[in-house]
Figure 1: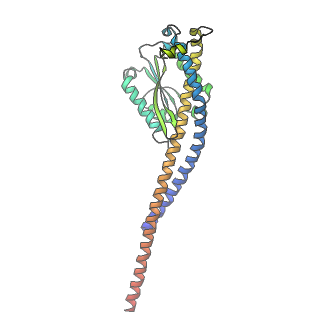
Figure 2: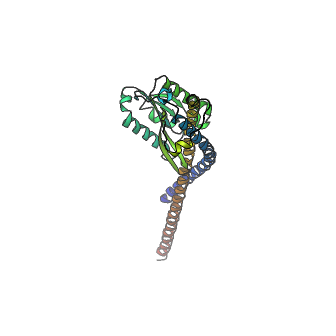
Figure 3: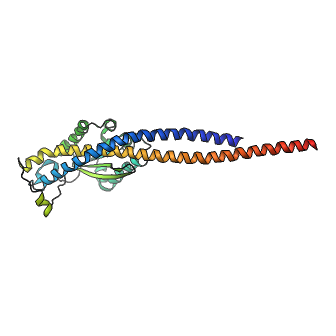
Length: 292
């Protein structure tokens, strides 16, 4: 009977876990739909603005004279790591944390040893792990719960101001780019300086527009606004990826719990049947012994 009691306790425990994971799956599904719609709506707008900025920069003269395009030796580096505030989302957070550490060791170990590397952590999980290893310049967890463009734009503006003043020389962002509910693409993206991609041939001719005012002036005016939007898109990408990862993870956990319950119930029924059979054998054997 002790074995039956242990199985009952395990069944009860797994049933409780299954209820929790099932509820979390439903909550994540509701949040995921909203986050997915947000990134789907934002992405075309962001892509088109990036194309406009790229097109302007193609023939805007010497972009190296423009502060945000100035390419220099990355002596002072900032790495932005976008994670989540909560766990239970598979490898979502660990992949960003591992990639950030890998990036720093591969490209910026010299800057780190010289105390010229800082982190911007958006999300509690990144701060908890990476903050133990590297200095954190800026940390915000509230943006993940309520992604306000104005607050994120202020962070982007801070980074752009520091870059323009040559207080930092390079900004990289590590985040999960949303693909679908089950797939997130880990991305390391250079935020600053801007790297113009020169286009030639037919595509360059097709984009030969007439601008008023000059391309240089448009580039200087539009670039900070577009960069803020790109920074915001990275956060929305990460939030959609997080909810998709958590929904998938909780779905798998619920399925695994149901499978375990099936096996335990079969095991419990077999053990119960065996115990009843043994008791009957003992009763019959006792009765025969009395008769004899």
